Structure formats: C-alpha cells, structure tokens
Length: 349
Image (cartoon, rainbow, N blue to C red; front, side, top):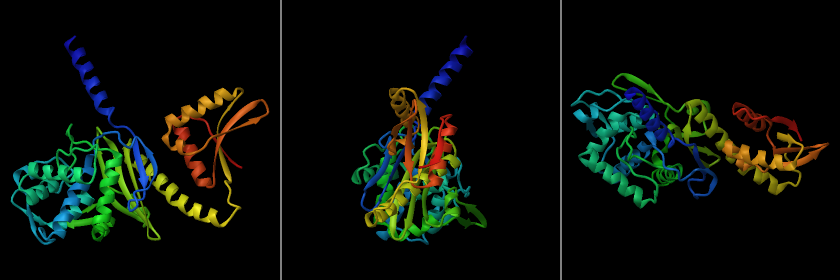
C-alpha cells in the first residue's frame, strides 16, 4: 500500500510539472514590436536555457559601459564547477576570457560559465539574479521571474513566450553590434571544439541564432532571429516534444510570416494574385458537423487557427477546407495533421 501511494504521488507531481510545458509561440518584428502570430503567449513556463538571453544581455551592457572587456579573465569558483551539464568542465581556479564566455553561453549553453559570469559581474549569483529581475521589470517582462543565470530547473525560474520575445527584441535593438556572435556554429576553448545546439544555423544562412533551451519540465524551446533584405523577424517557440519538432515548427512559422510580407507586397501591385491550393479537412452530411470539426481541429493544432476555413456543399456533403498559395506549405500542414491522426487532402484549387 505504501508503495502504491508513493507511486501515485510521484505520478501526480510529475503530471503537475508537465502541465506547465504547454506549446506557446510568438512571431513578430523585433524592431517595430508588431506581432504576426501568437498562441498561449502569456502562459508561464520554465524558460530553460533561454534564461541565458538575459545573462548575455547583461554581459553586453557591461561591455558597453566599459565595466568589462573582452579579454578580461573569468575565474571559475567551486560553485561554478558544481553546476550540472551542459558545461565546459573548467577546473576550479582556472579561467577563460569574457570573449570565450560569450561563445560558450551561446553555442555550448554552458551552465558553469553562466555562474562564473554572474560572479564576475555581481560578486555572487544571488546579486546577479537580483540584477536580472531588475532589468526584467525595467523592460516590461510581466510574467518573468529569474532564479538563476542559466535556466536549470527551479520552480521560481519562470517566463513566457511573449516575455522572451520582448527580451530578445530588446537585446537586438540595444546591442546590434553583438548579433554576429549568435551566428557562430562552433567555438574552440582550451583545445576542445563545441558545436551549436541550433542546427537550423547550419541549414539556412538567413537565421541569426539567438538561443535554444531544454529541460524536461519545459520541453524544447527556441528564440530565433532571421534577417532577409534588411528585414528582421523574430520567433519564439515553447514546448516542443523534440529538437526536430521544435525546429520544424519554428521554421514553418518563420517562413510563413516572412513570406506573407512579400506576398502582400506583390498583391498590392497585382490583382491577379490567388491561392492555388486547398487543404480539405472534413466531409459531413450536416453543416453543423463541419463547423464543429473546424473548431475541434483548430483547438488541437494551433497552426490552423491562422487559416480561414471555408465550407462548400459538394453533392450531399459539406466539405471544409482552407486555401494556400504554396504547395509545400499545404503538404507540410497536411502531414502535421496526419501526425495527429486527422484526415486531410491537398488539392489544386
């Protein structure tokens, strides 16, 4: 009986923890703060290593104020060396430069470096966290409380997709001279080479990395910046089941809203623009059933909320569908639906 109670308690506790790991996303322009897409944007969740965006924000601020220099040494304390991976495993008393620390935070997402940086800047982790929260309040993060500089599990270390969007936007606007650091895909420190966790950087040259994150309680997360023809687009995604899923979803959203802007420009100059493809999502004898199904699939898959669903009578059936101008996008959405065991068919319009 005691074992059963313990197991039951364990399950309940873990379910309550996992309930925080909800899908949330914000996509928009980090310069103008215009939002193109949002879902669960204010849901509080564990930010995991996206916490390091604030740590980096403070590092860049200290550099600009000449309180730090890139060649300054950062010595690792006992506390820094005791942090859980991911880390560089620098021995106690040894050091790296601020320049190396920036790359280690971005590329390796090194937790020992985050503590060492905090102690270098503020004298202690506690004092640094106080600084993090002060800046969070100043820039308008309403659903954020930082409890550490790295994002390792802590019930008080919470944020939201919208707050990470705001934080990332502020970093982009305030410290643009450091954005090139986020495009780097590898760094060599003390003879060992570390590669980025952000594999999208290796596939698409228009992405500027910013930060990825993961702990079990949060799922896989990312704050991702793209730059095409001097136009910036920022996407934040929380709650992926895997790094691959997270990358696929944020890549889809980024392409959708980057392309949407160019499509709108073409539409202004031409009256011949049209949607060439449709994705059929249901076929029912009653129109009420079609309407219920549309509501159901939009709740199940948040991507579909951004598409207007039509209902057209075909013979004895009411067919629901939405329109797209890209075959690849239509196929992608249909494949995502099928993964959720939802029926769909892609057709030319």
